[in-house]
Length: 254
Image (cartoon, rainbow, N blue to C red; front, side, top):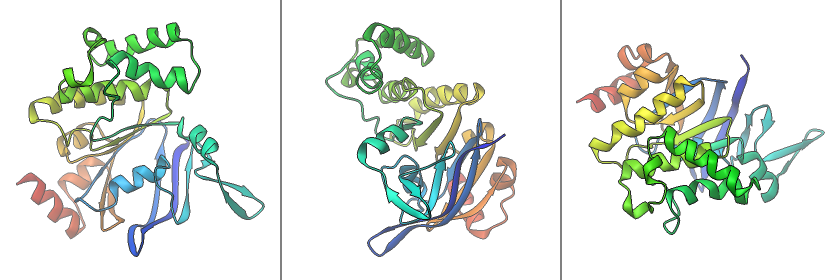
């Protein structure tokens, strides 16, 4: 099975601070990869580079065999313009910590905004698909609710439905449960489990080690901008080899 993501020697700086250090990674179609590590380790920055919210400084990222953010002519790279970047972003859906829903739009309106405005889908068709997505995330009865009328868990499920409405080949989750009250975490993870079971390719930055062990095909531990350890969940979470991985998992489980 071919890769949907290939990252080669990826480096990213913020002024003098190196946020990503020689990241080399492959993600195959249908794979669920969970990325764990302490705050500031580069996990979210890597996701943002995949989705071109940040531009890498060296190396390369390919999504579905297409170089992200640049075009190559001969041996020279040229940055893509905003329109070209927007087209590339259509391949990836991203779910953030803080939901990022439009506060003045209902759940249904939030979901159809992208398909109608970006994909130019007819409103009736987009609405039918949005209702199917709301049903899928257990919120069909909240179609007319505004974000302020929804719990954090419900807002995050709407955000997942909104990302899915664009029919992405890949879903990126940036700590999707970290802003939720504990009792709401389960409902969001349940939706993510169902996506994994359906074969959606997912990269999940998370501190939910139980979810990672249960759902992921692979767990990657990052620290100080680099990949320290990578492997199947049982190996990385239950029998980590690197002392930094061991210390992190011990601290999380205390």
